[in-house]
Length: 144
Image (cartoon, rainbow, N blue to C red):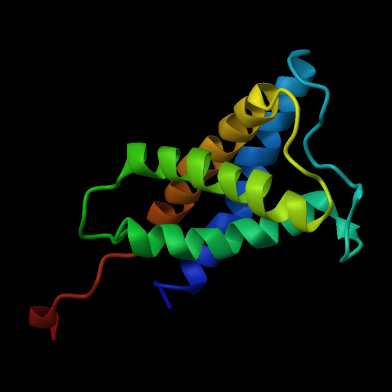
């Protein structure tokens, strides 16, 4: 259960509490136009965009937990989680998900990449925070 369910839940919660909150704070500071917690329908599913993003993020968290070998016995890979979220999720969105929705990379991509990196890097860090909080230490075999 700790290898799939907990990372999935952690990724979902991190999308809501870290990525969307980061976007909302950047919008409140006047740095970006996009707001966090977008209720625009996510094509083709029709659900609010922030829920669809949280579901995708949950699936990515399972991959991140596997790639970074996240477990209670190991030191937490904070920098790697930050970089994984910032680079992998941003690249997947810009070059995978958006083109599938008919939104093609064009023009000056730097602002879009910067905002994507900031929000997704915070997601990676937040997913690791939740994973470490939810994962218990493996029981010792000597404690019978």
